[in-house]
Image (cartoon, rainbow, N blue to C red; front, side):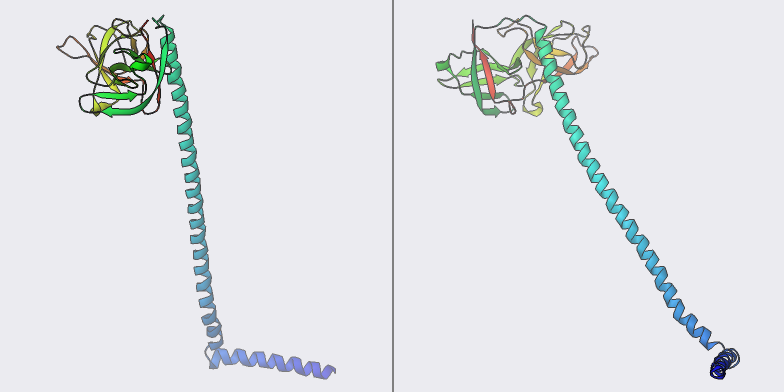
Length: 266
């Protein structure tokens, strides 16, 4: 039994020596070269696999960054919306504060109506409301919106409707006061090219006003005193002229507020 094991060991040893000598001196390392030839493609495949894995990792990172950017964009839009809401509330608060600084002459009643049409052209800016002479409406009555905001005045009257001349109409002029300084002035609309804006006249180069100052009705014409008109948006001194160049943004937007109130005469 031991002789068989010894014979197998000797046979394996002789076979190994024979292969080594054959590869070295006869086949010129063909066995080594064969193994090397097989291992080279394997190493190439491994290298490519590593590169592909790296590329996939980069793509995954790009997708993650894109998702984060989209999330940040949505959060940014949400913040802008919240800021807009805060600014709107602040504007309404400023309007109420400006109106509260004055003891206004109030008519005996308010007549409630709704806007059903807006008419704007190069020469006028007006709207139609669903109350008229049958409801007690008369010409030159002041038309306001919620918050004591001046919209315009009654221009034409029909039985159950009326036409309101808006503040941004070039044909309407209203006497106003700058609340911060008490400066008296007059405003008229800039027409369809600049809806929601007005030119402020009669402010001299010696008057001290600035952007953001509040305008209210002065009560020196047929309109009640203290109605909120808007805010100064631009004020420039003009060399050689007596009056400044002044523009204002009007407070009322008829598109967003369908309900209006008409001041009846006392």
